[in-house]
Amino acid sequence: MDFEDLKKNWNSQQVNKKDMISLTTDIKSDWEKQQRKLKLSIIFVALSFTLVFIVFIWVYIRFHEGRTIFFSASLCSMAILMIVYFWVLCKGIAYKNESYQSSSIEYLTYQIKKLDWLRKTKTTYIWIYSIILWISLMFYMWDITIGGSLLLKILAPLISTLYIFGTMIFSQKTKIKKQLIAIDGLIEKLKAIKENILN
Amino acid sequence: MKNNEEAFNKIVKDNHTSIYRICMAYLYDKSHADDLYQEILIQVWKSLNSYKGDAQLSTWVYRVAINTALNYNIKNKKHVTFSLREVIIIEGNESDKENKEKELDKLFYCIQQLEAQDRLIISLVLEDKSYKEIAEIVGSNINHIGVKISRIKARLFKLMENTSENGL
Image (cartoon, rainbow over the protein chains, first blue to last red):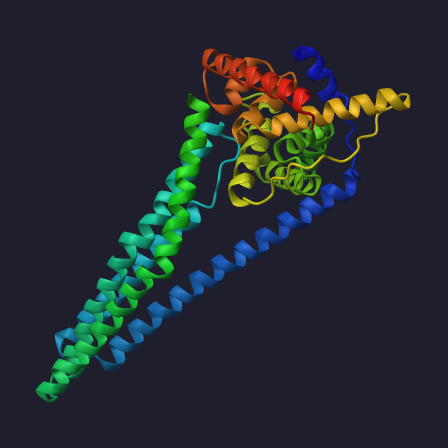
């Protein structure tokens, strides 16, 4: 048996022809549903962020008089936190636009890059997010406990710090650890496929 | 949108059988092959607007199909089965039909033993795609893909031989 015989065998397969019209309609309706969902999620994110920033401005205007500089610093760092979060979110959305029409090597390289980004959000950016959140809370605590007792001045930030970093470390050791194992496995698999195609 | 629909229908009409055969060789299991085929059509539909004509339409379609298949394999790990595939209806007398079915089954069984990416490449060869076109689809150079295809063919023949000796 030579390769031409294999080709003949291959071409002898019969494939059931699906109903073209219903197939196109299914694809179209799936696509429209996906687009609707995407539009709704973008509107939801945009509205949420606008609302949060309006609340920030309102809180500042309504309460800033008579407060220390730490109150404004707290709001500022909270706004920076939201911007960082929004930037990470937007970059994540941009990575969803996969280009299936590139060559396999380009496609695999893009998938690896996307997973590297996801890994970075779970290792680096999550810490940046937590630290800014912590700074913001510390400023706020400083502002509200300024006239309080020494015990309150120590306990309030201590409890907040323990809570934020305790939760972070716990999730890093449990949930995020599992996610990172899965991500690393996928990266390894993609690299192996890419390597195999190239060699 | 109407133009897209026409283009899409033409793509499906021209490539339906080839794409489906590739799905079957890649996944072996008919239900998964159906899912992958549907997924490929969705991706073709989604990508249609960004087709700039810088590659041949058939190359473009195969790129979408191969990348969707790679992605499908990564996302769905537990789908590979090594049982005999479904009976395929081929015109002819009973013994010819049985023989052809056996040969085809053996071919698919052996293709299934190859690495996932090699299954896709050999499917393209069996679909009579030129080395140049396969190189464009996978993003490699023509000499390298030629060497790779020779290796995959050799491995496939060895598997076919071993399968004949041991039976399916």
